[in-house]
Every structure is written in structure tokens, then in C-alpha cells.
Length: 281
Image (cartoon, rainbow, N blue to C red; front, side, top):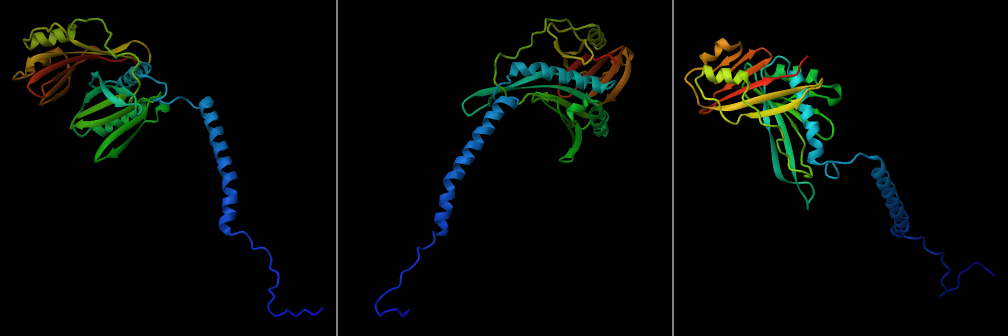
């Protein structure tokens, strides 16, 4: 039989190869299954080995001791500088999840310094904080700023809030609220240092001073007691015989009496007096 093709007869053809699109679809199903198995495995591992996040388990009540210890560390790092503890602030209504409200706690320390020495203070404190905090100072928007991590999702911050005033803070971020945060300290009197300052300025002793405390790293407590002492006086010169002067500038006067730093703040139209005792060593 000859190899000639008869007229009107089409030669047999081979099956067409699958289109590239069909070949990709053929791999899609097993690839999807493999990806789902990988995600399931990672989820299983995370649940059993990864630490919990703030939103999942660590409440505001659990964070309070960490914040308190962080503030004590900051006080210890300040050494002989003038400072005062600021009252705790609780911001409510933040969102832990799209469905759950929470609250955020912040505690702090205000440090008046000579204008121009703010960066040096932040650097000095950063060097004295625990190495595990990984504290560092960088320039942000033209101002030096300290950032550190005290652990347990508590952030430590130090920034210049005004010329000659540095504010350090320890903050929890938004947390589930287990118990309302309240000041459980017993009532205190004004104390001898503020009593002497009030007497020198001719001001009466208030009935309810404000006390703030933080635990020191080596034991004991750092504390600040503060009072509103009425309208701003014409002069703070009456305080000079009470101790060694640390800061003397318009609006701010600080002196040391023994182990206590007394700070007079005349910003605004009210005199604010604070006496602070730090951490030993």
C-alpha cells in the first residue's frame, strides 16, 4: 500500500496536549490543601508555645505591678536629680477587640532640669536602666526621646514636654479590665518637709494631700506627696533657708532637705508643692 493520501480523506491526528490553564488548575487543589495543613500546623504550634498577647490574656490588673516596678526603676536611675511622681492616669474606652472595650494605665515621673540638658538626662537614664529593657535615645521631630521595653507589654517613654522639663512614663497600652484601678494607699499626712515649706510661705496645711508611691528595685518605696497651696506667691525666696538649692528659675524652685527633694511649681495661677523621697543606693 502506498503512502499516498487519498483525496477527501483526513489523516488521523494525535490528542491535543492539555492547555496551560488546565495544567495550572490541576495543581491548584493539592496546593490549597497543603497550605491549609500548614496553617493548621502553625496555629497548633502557636497555641501551645507562643506567649499570650495583651488582647488575649494579660489584664490591666496583671499589668499594674509591672508598671509600678518600672516607675521605681526610673526613679532609681534618676539618682540625685530633682523629680516628682505623677498620679496614675487611666484612659477608658479603648478597643481591645472590635467587640470589647478596655482601659490603658500610665504612670510617670516629671524631672525639671536646666534648659539645654534634657538630652544628657535621657542618655544618662537610658544607660542606667536594665540591659533587658533595650533602652535607647533617638531624635524625633527635633527632640530627644527615650524608648524602652519593661517587659509584659509595658512600654517606657521619656520625652521633653517643655524646655527644662522631661517626663518619663510607663504605660500598659489597651488591656482588658478585670478590676477597676484605684489608689489603695492609706491616708497620709503632709509630712515634715512640706509642713516646713507651707509654714515658710505662710500657707495652711491642706486636709487631703496626694500621695504616689512606686517600689524601688532594692526594696522600699519611692514616694511623692504633693499639695495645692493656693494662689501663686510673689516670691519663693522664703524657701531658700530650708535646704540646698537644686533648681532656681522662674516658675520652678527645687531644694534638697536630707534625702527629700522639695519642688515648688508656680506654672499657671496655683502654687503646687511636692516632696519626693527616692530609692536608696
